[in-house]
Amino acid sequence: MVDLHIVHIIILYISSGTYPDNPKLTQKSRKKDKPQYPIPDNYIVEIESSERNIRRETKYISNTIVCYAIK
Image 1: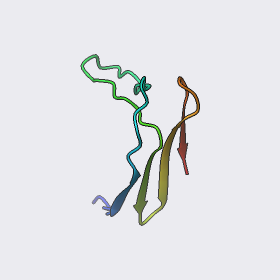
Image 2 (image 1 turned 30 degrees about the horizontal axis):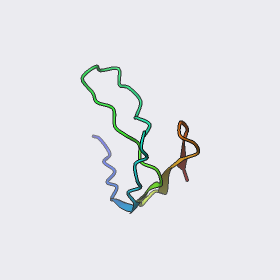
Image 3 (image 1 turned 90 degrees about the vertical axis):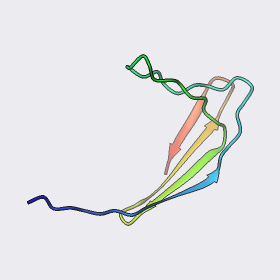
C-alpha cells in the first residue's frame, strides 16, 4: 500500500514585476514546440506549505543579466 502525503500550498504573488524594453527569455526547451517566455524584473512570489516557505525573486542586474534568488 502506498503512503499518501497531502500538502497544502499557498502561492502569494507579492509583485508581478515589470518588463524591460528588451527582456531576457526563459531557457529553450529540448522540445522544439515549447515557447520561451520573457522574464520580468522585480518579480516576487512566496510559496507557503506545511513543510517550508520559499520566496522566489528575479532582479535584472544589467540589461543582459538576471539574478534569480530563492530564499
